[in-house]
Amino acid sequence: MAELTRFALDQRGEACVREHLTGVNTLCTELLSVFESARGEVFTYAPTAVAGDWLYAFETGGMIAANRDLSRAIPVEGRGLLMPVETLIEARAEHILQRLKELPGGVCVIDDYNPRWGDPLHGGEATAFGVGEEVYHLVTAASGFDQIADVLGWGDTIWHGAAAICRPDHEPTRAELSSPEGLRALARTAVEISCTAYDREGFVNWRRIDR
Image (cartoon, rainbow, N blue to C red; front, side):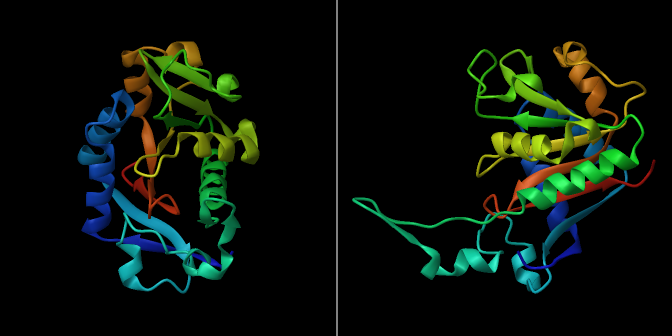
């Protein structure tokens, strides 16, 4: 993977975050309220060589050069070609882990949009909790890189994937968060929001700067 650089984004980045959080579920609705009411900055991490236009093509893949290299396509019998896709999910997980280490008592809640509570979670039971039919995951710095990366992968769809780094006054249990009121209370302490972007290749983050 090419070297990554942190790029500040303008109001187009703000619009991306706003659209990502609008009309989705309990968590995203409360995060949108935080985003709209608090001062913050929007940024992304991308390969250093990425030109400015790519940074604002939030719904388009190809930001990572390898994904534009069609010679990497793998023939699949009877199905044509399969193109392996590189993503920045490991960089996203590492960023979240480092932020959690910087924030005493910090936790991260990750939206798992596709399943409904009660569906098989394929290994996610250790971090999962439900609010009605909605599925979320709770991780901390103690969860470690691998688990955070796994949960981000489970929660990512092409069009949606949201995670919020929060700083509550105590570390909540999954049982405490298994109600709309409990989840909203945690979301109100969000200090950073991370949204899937670039056709799932990368992410756009908003960081609160008033606390």
